[in-house]
Image (cartoon, rainbow, N blue to C red; front, side, top):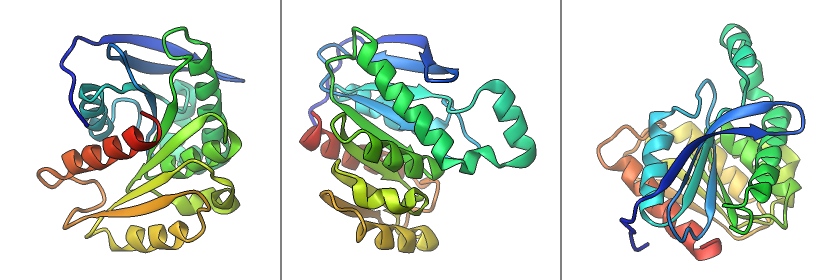
Length: 221
């Protein structure tokens, strides 16, 4: 990855999916090589500090990014009480598919390859969306993800997939090792030494962004 320090265009957007409109933040550096659509984890939103950090580093390397809410404000309020929607992988994947289609209609992103970056439960939804859109998704990256939540869709994923897990996040590491064997596409498990589930250790998120950027550069850049 070679960084670009040119100014970027950033704007708030309303992403029209099949059933709802969702708030998002779209950032497009000049001469972007691909657009990375983020799928946040359970109980999070487009304001996730971790995903915003990774997105900023990817932007410096010439990738456009779309961070978006996967639930409407009313749904978020319901989810805070019940916690059920954050695990509705079918619903979240449907909205990611809608967002990819929306990117295909926006003049600034229509011709760009699309990569998906999923965190925690969002990784499961990203993999289901990738299985549904084999001709449109060029790469998938999972950060501390739950690829097991994609269930049988794992075998249908055709996009090269990178699974990034903290070395100290032992339960999730085992889940990712099992999922790796089920993905038919080119796939790799990258372990960040001593990192925990949220990658809060100094430099851990920068390592996530470096591996993600290299993967997306290889397959979608």
